[in-house]
Image 1: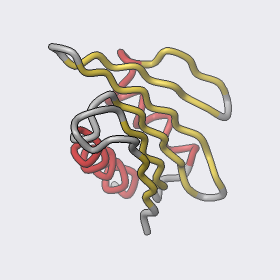
Image 2: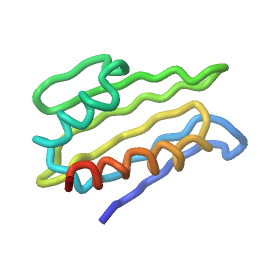
Image 3: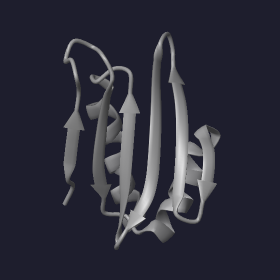
Image 4: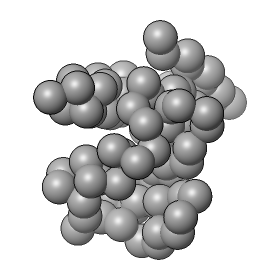
Length: 100
């Protein structure tokens, strides 16, 4: 089950934030992030991994992964709200990767 919360001050292409839960245990998420997104890691600790991604020409993504019970909580911040659904769809593929 995925829970999503979105916020945006203005729906005309300005920044937005999304927080949702992946059904992936934290112990598996580290390997998935290392395999797929290692180049974008800006900081990592036992309880949090942060990513920064620049999407030309002028878009940016900040992602924060942290454990919660048997899941992983992902916080996404972007300067273009239209990217949120695309990024969420991409990250949801990690649930299938974790099962394999």
